[in-house]
Amino acid sequence: MQNCPRCATKNDDDALFCTNCGVSLKTGATSPFEHQVKDFAKDMEQLGRKAGDRMVKTAQRIRDNTSDAGKHVEQRIDRASKHTENWYDRTFGILGPLISSFVFLIVIRLVIEFLRISKDNVVVFSIIGPMLYTYLLLLFGVTLLSSYTQYFSRKSHQFRIFSPLIYAIVPIVWLWVAMQILNSLSGPLDLPDLKTAALSIEQNLPTIFIFVLLLGYVILALTMSQEQKRKLQQD
Image (cartoon, rainbow, N blue to C red):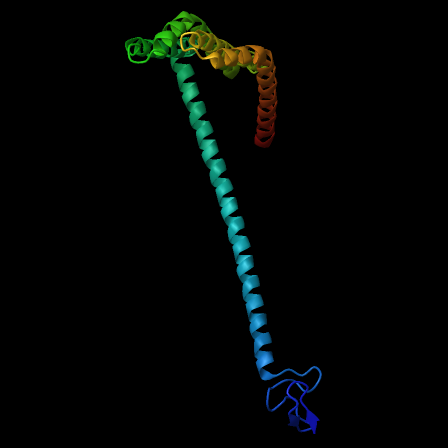
């Protein structure tokens, strides 16, 4: 007779499992319940592995489809943008940038007129309106410069080397106009913080100009590199 190591129940010498608690009486032997648990664990492990593989494959498929769809949409937008630009250039030619700049001028003039009408209700408008009118020709000039820069950049790749320099000038002019408006508002509104903000803009104009200029040349270099890769792939 042999005693069960768990409940001390006496069992036959050839018994593999305890008749009372079912524990294994022999090394390496497993009870039917333990065998079922192990089989269930193996089935769950295989099921989990299959589910994980399916999830990974599904995620990869979604990522690939999303990437392809994104590239397709990007290509369509790029083609539509180029088609619009080509249509505009073919229709208006070298007068296109001038026309778009005049449209901008009309919009700004309408804004100034709105500010003039509303100046009795909002005191700030009575200051901003005349200031915009004072610098209207300057804003029209930088818009015209930017428009013709885009036009000649599309027509001549050699001209594109100068485009970042011109694009850097445009935000500087707008910031300078904003600085003048803030200076004009600080007195009537009795807000010294506006004058401080204007002074901060004035001090940082050279830094902003250099940053925008360098950023423009980096973008230009990346764009030209991508265009060269596309040409090589097409060839």
